[in-house]
Length: 158
Image 1 (tube, rainbow, N blue to C red):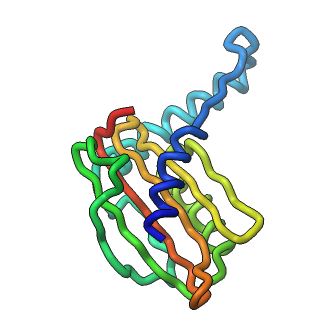
Image 2 (image 1 turned 135 degrees about the vertical axis):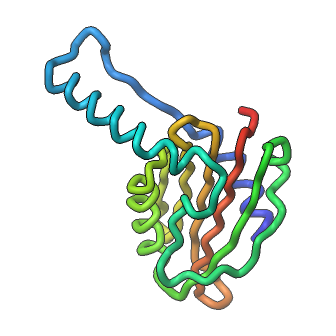
């Protein structure tokens, strides 16, 4: 299982991208939308900018299995922690929960991908891009439990 995580975590950073619109084509509603987004971002920035597991939603039916050292990819982060949770719930339910819950907590999505076999991965940044979170969920074959792996790092090099 760890080998899979070592593959997925670096792969996720290759997939991350952002897109922007044409700055010359703004309407008054675009400007108002921008003001609302900036206000929301500023309100959420204090909650996601610090390295705290309180800022990470935990799936309601998940139990913390272990806290581990971070994968080698994260070794240059100022702070880093990796947690693994398990649940009996369907991985699609877990994936849907995190897709919505991270946004509600004020995290900026880099990438989120759900796969047909019932797994997903995602990565998010704090409002000031100081804290990174990588998330992965899938069902284990041997016991059909869904694992949830979350890595959080602060001040990580690009």
